[in-house]
Image (cartoon, rainbow, N blue to C red; front, top):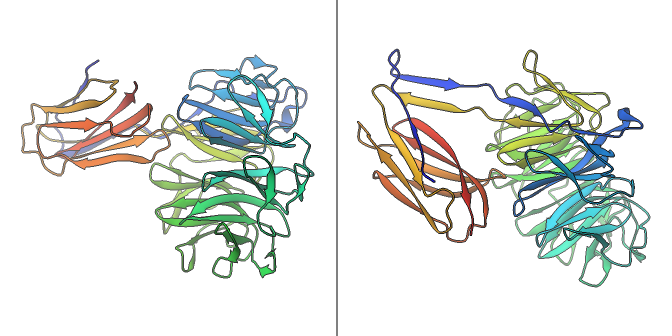
Length: 436
């Protein structure tokens, strides 16, 4: 397949920007707990980049027109499907992709192999919930409000060693909400104030052997952790959002209430919570300042909780929560059932007298593809291409110095990618598929 676009001249201005507002969309009718719709919710989401599906879990028994899905379903960008989860058991509070398989934390940790759910361990119910799953040093960790993991003592955090769940040092003395790997160490945030004998203020780090404090910690419970631009961000109670650079903490100001979840999207850090400033329950941060998200607002029948979640799938941001009813700002708001997706605008920023055509071929490709810039009336300048994966991460980036450039697959896995080409102040975007 050969794909191409022409960037045509604008006669009334030497530089113009055409754009469509960032838009919210319903996700195939959303999810519903049919017997008590007001209790419907989504707790967790996970993006499977190999099979190109988004998994969601929560309190629901139908997804779109699909009934009998229990509490876990998958979205392929067009329609919902079940995971043969007809038990109506409580939804998983945490989901994680590990070794191309889906793991779910609920009464115990389970694994989905594409056909069946199997327990990881003996299958004995734990005495608490697993609020987060995280892979660290090639091993699966789970954390939550439990003190017994698969029959073994483990204070709020445990590790799967291949044969059994074991304690992570002395653990911590209260719930853990979130886990995150940063600078080669595992960070845990929650409502605890000690890790073993080490005094802690709501956040601690594990180096594989010992627990230690993180710069004295922060002032209140941590609901969510996320790495952005080489720094670790912690959201929760006051001061709501802070970042750690490995040495010191810095508070992100301008937020007036609790932050519940963090997600990197479009090179910004997006956060949701119970705040009304700088946006209604959803906003963004560019490493130093918090600001509203364009057309960003969320309306819920109940307050968002730390169990709310976000994920990036096929270039869009997905937001799930507890009785999430609408998203967007009037007149561009949409109704939704507990999940909505947020997409960026298409935009062209073009020079006068520009009629440049950019072709990408082949697409899909397996080893190499070529970008060709044709009919360029001006010398190529300030030109580059950036390739993003479906999670928004930069997979490849290069300057463009002539009219033809070859992109080599190298070690990139199969999947959908998004290419942005900037040439003579114009921008071109295209979806690219890498396949065998």
